[in-house]
Length: 224
Image (cartoon, rainbow, N blue to C red; front, side, top):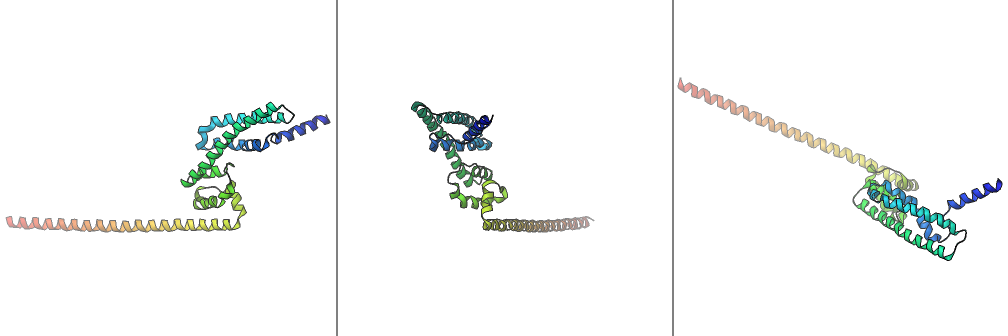
């Protein structure tokens, strides 16, 4: 019984890691596969759902075979496994490129929903190099974004950044208040001008009616 539990623990530990054979290539695929699978939750990637499901299934099969190689195998099997990894990494790279392209598209088009999903996908390359760019975007669109995931991490790392965020929020509220006051004044001015025009037209109408009545009385007096 004791040996059974030892074997079970060893098996669990081994399967928690990636296969050792060709790890430099395999780790990239195995570490990204769950992230790629979650891309199906993004509206813009739903068209790839079938491709993603097929890819995830192939990666799982390949990973299982990769563990088998660790127990010893022929050079032919090792080469076949390597070739499968090379094919799978092409799909991995396709989705990584797609995510990086979506990042630029979302940023340039001010699509805050997609921007948040992309930066939290875990597939954006060299993400810390984009830190300033991401923070600048967040500060400019924070009313449309949630402070979760990567943004929360960056905010937690930088006290000054939080202070800047709070100051910008105050400015944003103040700006909205000033804009509301400006619109109120414009509407009040428009109302005053409209009422003045209506009053003037009414006065002119009354004068015209009075003049017509006077002319009618004069005409009537001439016939008597």
